[in-house]
Image 1 (tube, rainbow, N blue to C red):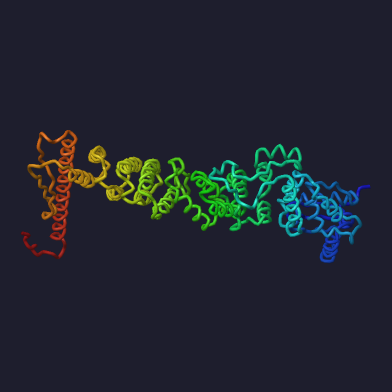
Image 2 (image 1 turned 60 degrees about the horizontal axis):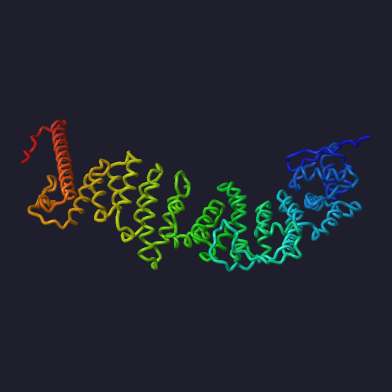
Length: 538
């Protein structure tokens, strides 16, 4: 005859179990005590109790119920022993309550832990994710990690703590590891995987981040203590494989932040000797968005910025945040680091100048790119970094085409980063013809070009501003026809056209001011109570 289910147990407010009170409390000292207290409080036979924070939730309580209903017997395996052990500790399933209780059975099984296979230990560790706090506080997690490291030491001669003395390598590869050729004590399955050098990278990648943190801490290489190239590369592999697809979420920042900082400290310590510039930039992209601390980010950017001359355009085109297509702020910080180094040669500075001009041309069409950011990048380099400003002008022209609603003042402001004297004649001619460039900017550019010409002149063209009678613009207008080349003749014609454009604009401005003055006088003369004759204006 089946036993009556006279007790309701609500586990973690997720699921309700209908069980027999005598059977379920026979093996648990804690349940006996809770049920007795509940009955005294409610005085109801068919009472229910709530159990919060139960290890493993409903899955854990179901295993315990099976143990109780099977007269204190259950099959213990490497995949459930950790959960059964934590449940037994939580419910007080000791020998005092019942002989050969669940706690005793799990402890007996765990005594053979050091004889488990590598995969058995990994499987048991992986099962601890949902009840990590319990397995950690019980001390079982420390024992499992100890068994893992012991098994690793038996089957590999990789030096985990001491950094490798190998030369520069990419983080995508696993070169730089120290392996022993001796495999006489290594199992056959392990030996086959050892040929790939980092056979344990993928194996450990199945573990959750909290347990990986515990493993790294057990090796004494967590956070600022990380000086191991091997562990740094493993963590990079782990973060790329498990965390990148969760990048940016709040959980990923809290779960992976410590590991990201550990990677950063290791990379900063090893620096240029272990990673190429592209490798360093790849690392920054992997750990960004995973809760990387500000100090670690600054340290990585200092290391990367000092090698900016090794970058390519594709390296800098990083996806942006906050609505931008590209992360312009990151590039701007890297440029500032590079420029702040007094030991940078002129050749490297000019190489970076050419790179940044290409970058500006690539990011200019971004509708969310503000003028201040464009100017920040363009003006972050010293003037000596560019022999020619044609690249900057092309980027400005693309920006103006992509942002047609800019005001006159904004377009003028954008052009302030140009050095007209370093524009080629072709770029200057294109600038003069462009309707997107403010007229006065075009005149200044052409004037700068004319001042660089060493052609003898025969007469001067004097332009007097109709608004400011004292300001004069003296430009050379007449040339010796025989010595003037075709390009200089075109420049002269463009200059004249721009001068007339300015004259017409100033005339229109003067006319508007006159009309505004007449409107003001008419308004005063028609005001009530003002019948006096206005004084005559001379």
